[in-house]
Length: 186
Ligand SMILES: CC(C)(COP(=O)(O)OP(=O)(O)OC[C@H]1O[C@@H](n2cnc3c(N)ncnc32)[C@H](O)[C@@H]1OP(=O)(O)O)[C@@H](O)C(=O)NCCC(=O)NCCS
Image (tube, rainbow, N blue to C red):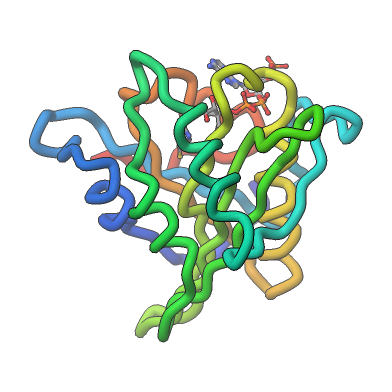
């Protein structure tokens, strides 16, 4: 990756709490990855397969809950809907933008971009990325992240961060496939 990345780290403890499961206590690895906005996102993405629209929290709550429920598998318990809905709301020092992907007219995926301001400056991170189990490997996740990264780039971000877990099947492989690189493990 080009050397323009900022020295910014996101610790998404909210994410850990909202899945209702303490991965650290269980010894499951948290993986932090970074994407330089100077580079081009990779991975499959067929715009014909998914349309990505900005979330309107006044009307999209049921669609978001549909995506959360559809993302659950035996290997991915998923977050609680109230936690995700709460995390979609901005508050002082933490601006949240969210997008829904629709596939064949139905809610297929959700992504959030969190822009937080603190002593370390402005940080951009992907808060949640969820794709319905029946819609995977069709470019939905790639399309959602491309939208979030494009927004972050327009906001001046040099780096977009994400935290994920070794325990989530395919998650690290997905982020690496679309151009994120591992920045650390805890
Ligand atoms: C991870 C996740 C978001 C991927 O979404 P997706 O829509 O299936 O991803 P895409 O179709 O855009 O995949 C792009 C590329 O990523 C890689 N990839 C995606 N899922 C993968 C998996 N399970 N195993 C290995 N590689 C994978 C592939 O290279 C893929 O391209 P290909 O299908 O042509 O081989 C989805 O599986 C999901 O919601 N999982 C549960 C929640 C989760 O883990 N979220 C991320 C937490 S931060």
